[in-house]
Length: 257
Image (cartoon, rainbow, N blue to C red; front, side, top):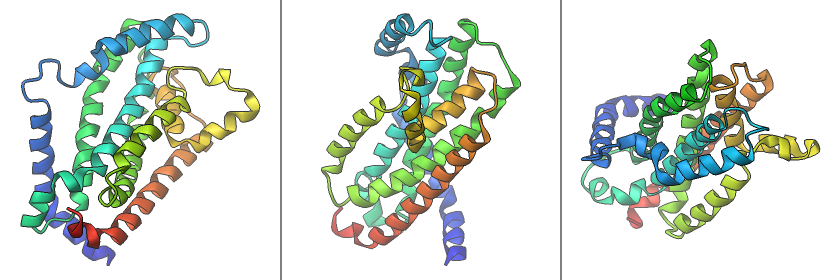
């Protein structure tokens, strides 16, 4: 069964690459700022200025702290939400061609992944301008980024499995996304949380990925081994859960698209 799935994936891989390429070009067609707009938008700049003033003493290099956290958070949320709607949005193509449905989830997440990778350019430009020193640790940022990518695919598959049947999932996810934003230390420091309760934040995968990313990208330090293990565990577990759920529901998709 596993071998059959691998053979199927490799057979349709050229199609997946073509879908990703076409959709990415379509998304940023005639866009001057392109992927940099997500970090250069007026709202982002306003938030950066306001919270830089509030937390300037407790968080050094606050713009890098806030933008790095938002980079990971936005990727996971946008990737998962686009994956949730991917089967519905490609229903006409699914009816005409025999294509693995999960390819559309992977394509949606990968498009957002490419956007995030390109956004690293303005992110590090800002970081160096405000005084963050280059470090060999910065080369390790791809570890949390890849783990976040795997986690997002798993989450996207899980959401798509139910979102294809229940269209209200979009509204529920929007609410959950807002709540998730506030329980993740993106614009505020973890230090404001009483020490006795900080361990609860490790139950939040996004906090773990963002913390590891910040350690590599701006703190010039190696995250704890425990944190790295927890991050890897979340990614693998979510991917397996997403794949199992998607496979279980997939046979009934055709009745709802």
